[in-house]
Image (cartoon, rainbow, N blue to C red):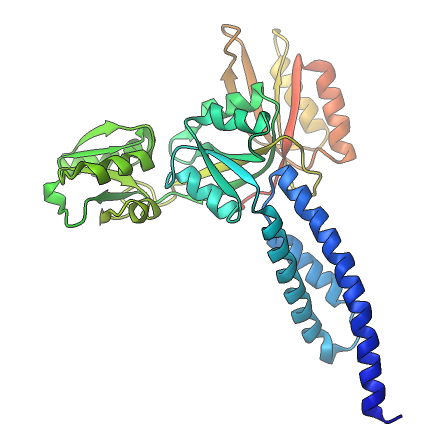
Length: 360
């Protein structure tokens, strides 16, 4: 048998084995997709891919072919992602507002293959996941300028859903109006109150009257249907394109660092290696109670990144606390801390984990 024939036989036998292993791998990919749908996780995870490529490429001893194996891995992962996306096409993602709202933009970037479903408010979107109508919800939790979104934090405290990640979306507000509108034509500007607040210097300097609207996208929707060039909206570039409006002035928000953090909420808690955790709790009504709870957290080596107090709706002058911690509470050390904290706190909930600085 000559070399060519022998080589072709080896390739044929290897291809047969690869085909069997491919089916085995894709079955595992299917299970991964199911897990991501159940836990409200996106298909693409860049840090996981980088870790696997580095780990697996080290198994190749021949340096000459190592770079080709890295390309082989990348192509295999791309096929896996395409398969996961096909399986995830039936994933329902709840958000508050209408198409074009910043929550819609965030949901689209996190879950480009999911079905984005609009709900009238935060509570309706949250409850849609609790009831099983949707697989996850994407809701704003904090803006760098306007502060926390208290209603969402209250839903997290009162409800049953888990946070499986937090994403940061840079907010760029634009003055948008009917095509052909000049800035001197505009007399009134409408948008969500937070957007109006974040652009207050611009509005005041232009001498515009401002009116609050339920959200930025609905404001744009209204402007698109009025035929009135004296009315403009403040919204995103994507929203302007969606409703056939033009940008009269771009980036009119006061701060270039305007960012909103969005949480992904689902019915199950993702078991992962994320580096931050979230808890909510109440403490007994006695002197030093909060300090004692904070000391328990610190004594177990966890650093509090932030703590927020929120009034409880059913008990006057009583508060609960929302805390973001550095570290994963799913590990043993975290479990020990939660056990000790639960013995002291009147109510304690471990809400979930997230990776810091995930920008979309």
